[in-house]
Each structure stands twice: as C-alpha cells, then as structure tokens.
Figure 1 (cartoon, one colour):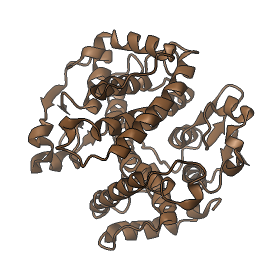
Figure 2 (figure 1 turned 135 degrees about the vertical axis):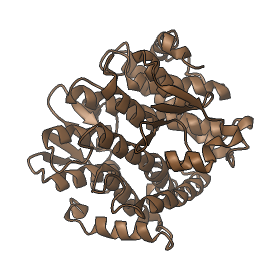
Figure 3 (figure 1 turned 90 degrees about the vertical axis):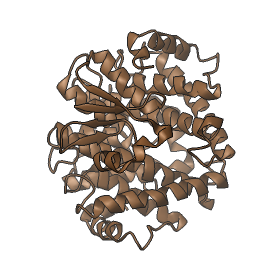
Figure 4 (figure 1 turned 30 degrees about the horizontal axis):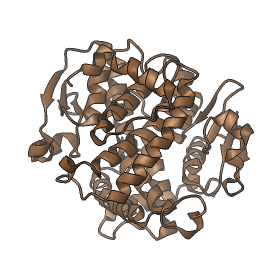
Length: 205
Length: 205
C-alpha cells in the first residue's frame, strides 16, 4: 500500500495522526506537492479519481480518497487501539461526533483559512464574506465542543477516537489565520493541550 | 425506537428514504416542527444534545443524531438490502463517495438554499455571496458525478447505496432555488430519474 500525502494540508495530517496512534509504519508515504500541481497530473487523477490528497493506493484495483474512508479501511487491518467504535452503539456515537466536528468545525475552519490566508489566494478565488461567516460558525461550535468536553476527557466514548483527531487537526490548522478557541472554553483548551501533547500530534509535521 | 423527523428538511428525508429502501416500518416517527422551534425545547435538547433533526432515540441511554450515523446504526439491525458495504473494500468505496457527495454536493446545495430562499430568512442571516459561491461549487461537482455515472448505473458499487440517497435528496431539495444539473450532464439526469422513480423517493414527502 502507498499513501499519497502532503505535508501542509490538514486532511492528510488526519491520516498520518491516525497511523501514528496505531503504530502503522509499513505503508510507503509519497509526498504530493500541491503548489507544483502534482495532484493534477493525469497519472495521479487516473489513480485517485479526484485532485485531492490524501489517497491510499491499496492495490491496482482500489485507491481510496477521503481521510475518514481511508482511516476506517485501515482500522480493519490494524484494529488496535480502536478509533471508530467496538460495537454498533459506539460506532454510532463516534460517527455522530466526527460528523458534527467535520460539518461544524473542520469545514468552516478550512473555509476560513482558504478564503482569508494570502498564501492560498493562488488556489482559490477568495471571498471575504465566506471567510468571515465560516469563522463565526466555527467559533459558535466551540460552545458545543466545550459542553461535551466538560463531561468527558475526549469527544466520544471517553477515549481518543477519530472525532478527536478531526477536531484537533482542524483547530491547529486554523492557527494559520490566528484562530484560537475563546478563553472561556476551558474544557476545549484542556483537551486541546492533551491532544497536542500526544506523540502522534507531530507525525510528519 | 423513535425517529424525530421533520417533513421539509433534507436530512431527515435521507433517513426516511433509507428506511423505506429497507422496508423498516416498526419505528415510531415523531414530527418536529422547526418553524415552531420544537427542536429547541429543553426536552428535545436534553435528548438529542443539539437542535437538529433527525434524531433516533434508541433507548434511555442512547439518542443518535446525524443522518449517516443513524442509517449506519440501522443497517446493523436491518442488514438488507446493504447500503454501506458488504466488506471493507466496498465500505471504503461507499464512504469515499458519500463523503464527496456530502462535502461537494449536499453541503453546498444546503448553503445555496439557506442563504437564498426567502422562506429561510427567518432562520438564517442570509449572505448572498455565500449562496452564489456554494451554488457554483455544486454546479462544478455535477461534472464529477456525471463522470462517475457514465461508468456505473449508481454512484458506488453498481447498486443503490447511501451515496445515492445523499445525492438525490440534496439535488431534489435544491429545486427550492431552481437548481437543476446542467443538460450536458446526461448521466446525472438518467440516474436522477431512476432514483426519483423508486418507491422510497416518496417516503414521507
């Protein structure tokens, strides 16, 4: 298997972090330079189907894109420590939470960065109203995260799961536009500190 | 089990459609009136955790929100016909596709409606630039869908899956703002016609 990776983008980092939590070291990692357009070459597009990283080439017949789909597939091959749920109830709670994080935190923060950071003007027709609205939505979602983290050490099932990896990588990425959860969200800060202190937080960073 | 549902919103429709494909008829459906704010009552919030529909109350300990998490949970109880994949490879391909659909089609079309339709001005501070940009992204994503549907009768694994339900309900919802895939996307139109002709398309509509 080969993982097509890119150092600066946030979604490949989810997969590197996930692999580090599981101690996966036997997958070849190939760097794709987005600023050189290496994700748009005919060869890459034929393999991945879309101009996105990360992509996991499993064999000649199957290349998976989408960070969460890649990680769930890897979990079937490297089951421990469990990140997607040990039974249908846990699986539901974890998916509920990583979807909330994806749609209310990760996607808005990604938009806030892409539509505001000068270095990304080359990749995107930036619209200031989009950056501003998305940043506001992410700020509002911190309240939801804080409430959940006031009841639990981690976002779902009281252990590190895919939901925590998505949330921590997104919030860390948004430092690019000086985003930081409000000081009043003490549980978010405690959790974020714990996440960023994990060895996996530095995987390929 | 009880499903908290709302007739006009697109995400509850995903679950109704999914249940109809599987012939699930033994779950009580409770209507939540969003315009009366019934999703914001203390009782509903205590149960669901967020002011969103749909929500599946499994028992006193577990209420699941998020359409895809609900459907994946239901699939463990009602396995046929399979909608999430029969093995890890199929599961990866289907999740890859429903995530692409969620992030590149469903989310943009939802934003295009919420930020442009007069009836929703009461629920949202509407920003015209957000509606316009999102509509453009969804239009571009039709090209990706059309390419995929030129190779296969359905979006993933050559049968109706969660990916098709997400895509069809979103495109149908966006008729509210006169969205229609461009005429040149003939494979999208053939597929959409087939989806909307299924009995499940009219479940609770």
